[in-house]
Amino acid sequence: MGALLDRGVLTGYDGVHRPEEALRDRPASYGRDIRYEVTDSGRAQLRELGVDTGRLPPRRPAVLYCVDWSEDLHHLAGGLGAAPTARLFALEWVRWGAAPRVVQLTDEGATGLERALGLTLAR
Image 1 (cartoon, helix red, strand yellow):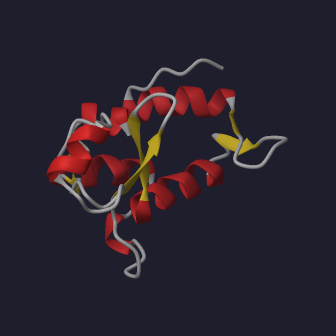
Image 2 (cartoon, one colour; image 1 turned 60 degrees about the vertical axis):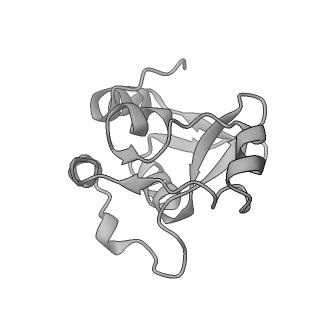
C-alpha cells in the first residue's frame, strides 16, 4: 500500500496507523474509518499492470485497509486489494508458501514489481 500511495495510485491518507487518532477522530471500525481513493493516474497505472478498476466486485468497498500491527502501517484490502493480488498470482510473480497466509515473491515478480511500481523487495 505504501508504494501505491508513494506513486499516487491512492490518495486520502499517509498509510500510517495511529490508533489514538483513529479512536478519537474517526470512531468507525478500522479499515473503514479512513477513505482512500484511487486517483485517475492510479487507474492508468493499475491498467498497465492488467488490473481494471472498473471491474472490481460491486459487493465490497473498492479500497479498505487492514492494519499490520508489527509495523503500524495500513495494508491494502477490499476489492482493490484482491484484484492486484489475483493478477500477481496470474503473472506468477507470487506463489503460495508452505504455511497459510504466506506468499513467496518470485524472481520475475521482484523484477515486475520494481518495473511496474518502483517497489524494490528483498528476495
